[in-house]
Structures are given as C-alpha cells and as structure tokens.
Image 1: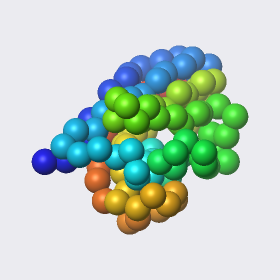
Image 2 (image 1 turned 120 degrees about the vertical axis):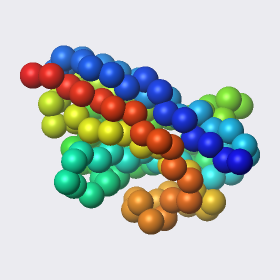
Image 3 (image 1 turned 135 degrees about the vertical axis):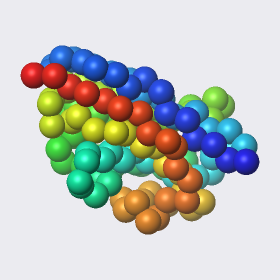
Image 4 (image 1 turned 60 degrees about the vertical axis):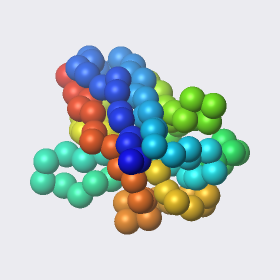
Length: 124
C-alpha cells in the first residue's frame, strides 16, 4: 500500500521558517516527479512546487519563488519543502503528491498519490 506522510507543519510568525517533509512508503518514487500543493477552506487546491526524479528540474509558483525550495532525497524516499520568509497568506493545508510519470506536473489531476496534509499557519 502506497503512503505519503507529511510532517513539519505548525504555527509560525510572519517572517519565520518551516521545513515540511513528505515520506513515501509502499513503493519507491525515485523515478517519479513529486510536488507540493496547498489548500485553504473554500478554495481549490493550489500548486506550490514540483521536482523531477533526478533533482535537475524544479518549478515553483510565482508567489513562493525565492522563498520556498523543493528538494528530495531518493535514498530516503523523502521530499522536502523549505519555506522561508513566511507570510500570513501562506497559511493553508499543505499536501505532498507523487506522479506515476517522471515528468513535472503543475496540476492536481496529474498526480496519482496524495498525502493526508499538514497544517501551516502563519500569524501576522
């Protein structure tokens, strides 16, 4: 059974940092693209960042560029999202996801496996 488990969320003041982790089990994702999404109540799930299987390609949405960094450790079957200079508008439930494909994906429907989400709250 494939599982993606996020951790590292919490409450932080504006300007602070958090590091999210996404640990995969049940299969290896070393050949697959992975990504981060976030969602707030009443809104659609929003793409945040993605990383290719070989770390060579990453992509982030404009609102987080320069502040968030996506990375992965294929030996640990784990993906990370380092979040710096957090803003109140970054408050959301953050989800990690994995594709069956090696290609980067920017849309939620392109992803095949999802974690349960971790809450990030940024206070002003």
